[in-house]
Image (cartoon, helix red, strand yellow):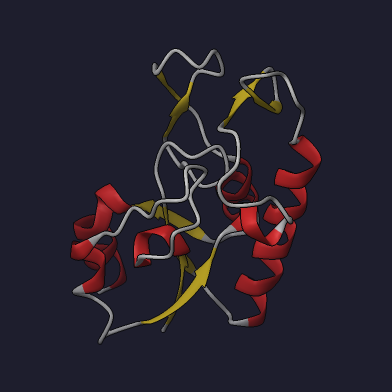
Length: 146
């Protein structure tokens, strides 16, 4: 079974600060599933590292006010096409990300506060029938797909 997975969770240093968010619990599943690694932000052409972004009033902006909404939409669309091409029914994405967050994202004020919400890619995948989990929901994912 092909599972779409945020590249940073698999150890790729593609996060805004040039780091990864390696998820060892996810790696334990690697033998049972075929992971399709994606980073929507890198797919959209954004560099690594890059200025952090948050969603504010339906726009994806940097702390300095640059609007990267079109990049995030482009990355989401490319990610959806990859998911479709590999017939991915499920995705495990990085929580809190303006691309990949699927239940909590930052509030858009760069204050470090979280709010309920979804990232651009997570929303598009869900709208297209792909069931999205976060790295905090590995057990839920395993129970769901059994």
